[in-house]
Length: 156
Image (cartoon, rainbow, N blue to C red; front, top):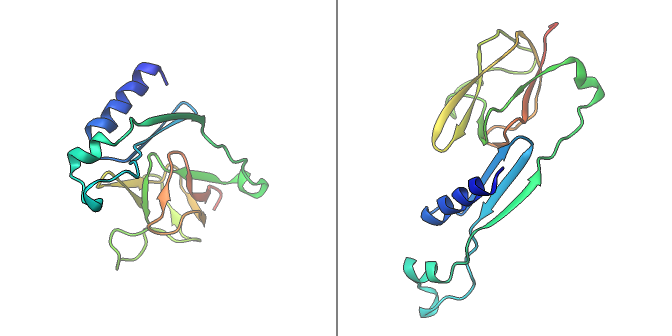
C-alpha cells in the first residue's frame, strides 16, 4: 500500500468516530488504531472536544498477512473463503435453520452463509458443487478476508 493511501486511511479514522480500521491488500495488512490517553479532566466526565484534544494521532502498522499452510487432508477439498472482513452467520435469522450443514450437498451458486460487514448482510454463495466436509467458523464469529469458511469435497 502506498504512503498516500495510508495517509487517506489515517485521515478517515481521524474524521470519524471509529477506533480501529483494518485493510488488507495484496498480502499486506494495514491496521490504524486510535488510542485514547488516560488523562481525563473533570473527574472522568470529559466532553468529546476534551477527548479529541488529548487524543494522539492514529498509528499505522503494516505487516504481511498471516498465511497458514493447508493441512495435508484438506488439499483435496475446495475452500469457500470469506470475500470480506465481517461476522459469519450460518443462518438467515437466529432461530432459523443453517443454510448448510456438514455432509450436505451444495450446488454452485447456492447461498451457504451470510457475512455481515458494516451493518450490511452479504449472502455468500458456493463457487463449487460438492459435499460440505467442514465448517471452520462458529456462528456469529468474526472472519477475515480470504479465510476459509467451509471445505467442500467436489467429488462428493
